[in-house]
Image (cartoon, rainbow, N blue to C red; front, top):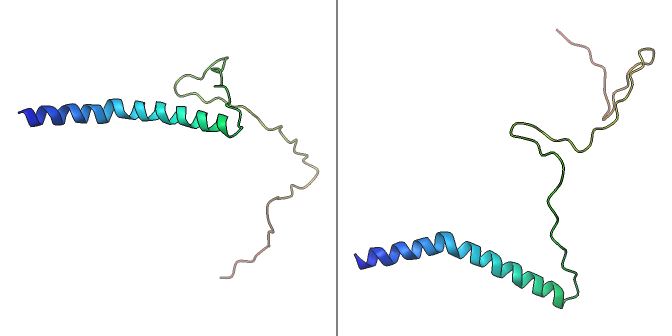
Length: 89
């Protein structure tokens, strides 16, 4: 019974406490190394203000300008070399 209790406490420690502890210690170590080697520690970005998309919606940062299609001018394909072909039966 004592063995199971010790094992349960160890598993809880490994699963819930150890990852947060390692993350905090690693972040502290990296900041210290950056300061000692002359790098500036970047400040954390503030949370973005503005409307946040709700579930199922998409937020678009950039929309490219639309190209107007001239019906008098034939449309030229871009992106490669196109070869006409004949179907042989």
